[in-house]
Length: 335
Length: 254
Image 1 (cartoon, rainbow over the protein chains, first blue to last red):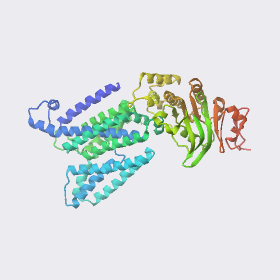
Image 2 (image 1 turned 120 degrees about the vertical axis):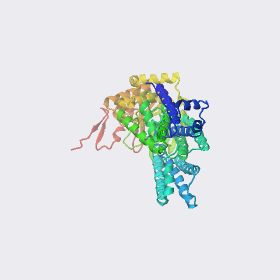
Image 3 (image 1 turned 90 degrees about the vertical axis):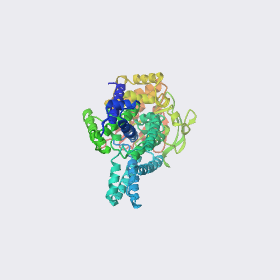
């Protein structure tokens, strides 16, 4: 199968997954109706149209951009750190966000506020991840090699995680439940402002990120070789960190820390396309991340029932077996 | 490439002092010396990765630190021994990266680039492997791929840091043959560091011998006449025989 055929299949699958995602749920909407409505035809059943446009479509768009953002961040981190275990959160961005949210939830109760809104958790997560991002960015300007940066990122993660556990130890049952609810991820609670921020930042980052394709490929030869090929390793490293921070930070702030996807999707793409070339991996990760997130979201809304499972659990339960199966089948990992 | 009054090292710790010499186009130059004497430090300095402590390195009259590394990539190509390259790159993908300094932001190859890549593949006899992944190659074939990458970069200077390290005797000789061909038939300035002193004496045009007190730069025969090779290693174990142009072991168990 040629690479362009594989891209066509991925795109078709994504469209199918989108229609399924819109149609299935506690209320079933006929596939044809969702498709028609997407193309702009008004539906006869106004209540279905309402569910579709004010609930399911925003959620699908969120899933789409979050999936693409995390997959691309994972790819960038794995290439920069030359480490197959790197993911969007190695720099401590999700821990920063967790700390922000934990502080806000626990702090609010000090002022007698028992329940904080989604807007507040979003704010807390944004501030937390922005702080970590700017710290890491400052350090990136000083540290010469990427490996130290990776370890510093992991250390940041440990510190913030430790502070979060102290906070949760001290907090009440209700606060803890709120925090855990946030940390399991939620695609459905996104309002239109948050959604437009997510879409705007993602599209901007994806576009600027295109200029990284050539430096990323050069980095496959190691940093000194990349430099000898005329690539500014330092500038590329900083741009990679900024883009990853924006993408992973925004999506964590808006839907919570979604694990696994960012680590796994780049590996799945390398295995399926049998290449390490970023000209292929860049678009492939974007599309596959979208596809994977849509599938997970469809499963998590448990079709034909009103219950909803946490998205963060579904991504791992579905994704990890796929990676294990592919690795056993192919015997050798592309890294 | 001219080195003038060059002192190299790290943070005030000088490794090699007082280098005054010129590496010329069309010549094969080797740098030899005992481990830790500063071969890699010198290589890093002349390819612009490391700042010199004193003195200067210049290419065609221009100081190397004044050349942006984008521009430098069109003058100097470097083959490292670190083997940091991702082995899942195919041979073609790796060789085409030599064209990076000339390509646009997305890295689109022109017809001219493709011709140069094909020429590099043919010259190093690796065309038949071009779609294979690098991990499938032997060390000898892989070394050729790395040098083909440097050739594709189309620079007058090619610098190699101990390129013979992972190779057997046949491939070591073959490597020197390839480099000598590049120097003499393609008018390249080849500079390599190596531990293959005997091969270097046979095949290089000029040698730089790094000793503790001072560096010597001359033709291999002149260096033999000056009895420089005798002083590379501590004399209690190995000695240089100027007639056979080879090193001989002293009897370690008397």
